[in-house]
Length: 98
Image 1 (cartoon, rainbow, N blue to C red):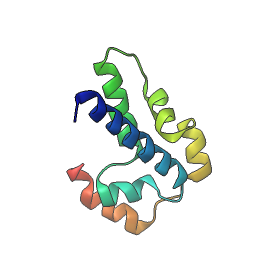
Image 2: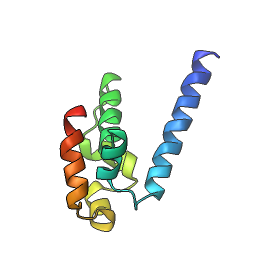
Image 3: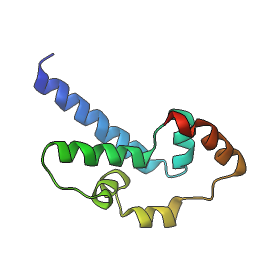
């Protein structure tokens, strides 16, 4: 596989992952962190870092809007639930691995 095709496939997979996460608003970031060790915020941080590596200025809010499809505060208001005691305990246990 040539480099351009690889990059295009990776980009397509990223877009599909982001669309999937936008559609799964029932899945909380803490659930993602507890199960996979990353969440939507991690993706947005990685996006911001990649932009900066290319010499593009991007702040955290802009990167989060790319991943969430809306301003982060709007997403939190619409979809973020209070974490349960079990979710918090699992996060505290797993957090050092992040």
